[in-house]
Length: 131
Image (cartoon, rainbow, N blue to C red; front, side, top):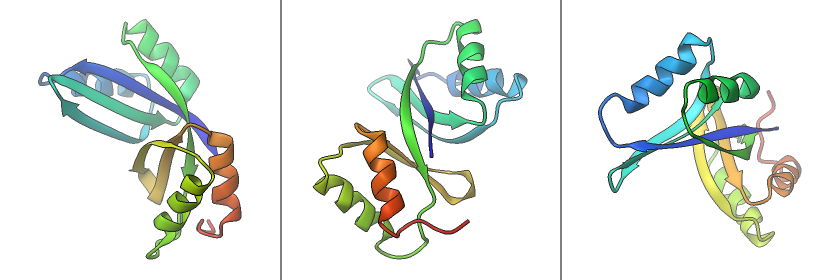
């Protein structure tokens, strides 16, 4: 399954991340997975939500600059080698992984330069859990 990932770059100051989370919370938007880190004086926040369309509107209304990226949501088997098998297959297919993080409900989020191929490989490789 693909979904929209939001990417926000902010100043690396106390409360900035909390402000974004609060803005989304007030709009009843759930952050289902994400990654926040700081580097070189800036904060970087990549995340997915339960309602990408509403998230875009709320961020725009709040004057929060963002970019988006299509990402693939997977549920890998919880077994040694599942991640290695998938990432190796993606590399062999020439797919570049631009982001990876874990979300709620044991979901893994892959940002790649080719979401369609990523989804196809993940589906056909036998490394996904049965839900």
